[in-house]
Amino acid sequence: GEDVEQSLFLSVREGDSSVINCTYTDSSSTYLYWYKQEPGAGLQLLTYIFSNMDMKQDQRLTVLLNKKDKHLSLRIADTQTGDSAIYFCAESISGGYNKLIFGAGTRLAVHP
Amino acid sequence: KAGVTQTPRYLIKTRGQQVTLSCSPISGHRSVSWYQQTPGQGLQFLFEYFSETQRNKGNFPGRFSGRQFSNSRSEMNVSTLELGDSALYLCASSTDGGRDQFFGPGTRLTVL
Image (cartoon, rainbow over all chains, first blue to last red; front, side, top):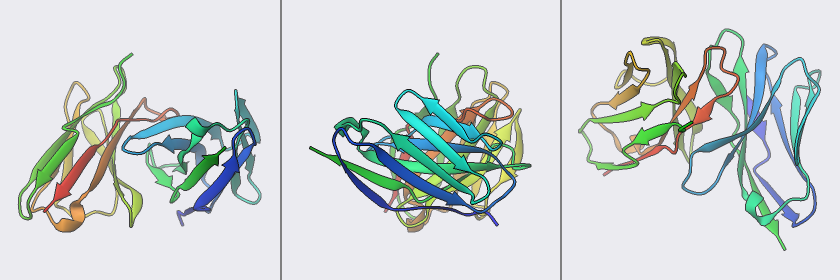
């Protein structure tokens, strides 16, 4: 079945690294995504990883994918107050065209 | 390149009315997907259009419909509005193959 799960809340100190975790159930996932949503705004695409990759790095962002455990993580280095937002993990399914299945979102709070 | 635009940004309707929302994708993108975001259900896929054809549909009642025009702009319509239709409606645009899926700012619909 199609299901994506995330922890709901994460609090970190400014300057520390944040790690947001996600698990998914569908083994036919093609791409896995991370989106950021700030209050009152739409979804901002942060990064995505193809399902046959293990890692992708993009500036302060590192995505790790463990296909065996169906586990995806997003690491934000040197977290800033501007990183405070809700982060959504999403998967696209083979044969599903562009349909995305989203997790419930992880609220990241960055404090001084 | 201009991003995904959605109009209107805010709407207030009463139960029983109908509403039409519009989405203009990024130039060159032929796929438009629609999502409903509510606090209780999170982000749920409504449908996807590609080259004026609906390719995929989520689990929503027939009151929710959409279409796509030859210039790739898309509209979604909700008839006989219910209180539970109050939500943020987001559209996403992508090329076929959909690796990069970019979202618009959303239309906030309030049903009274």
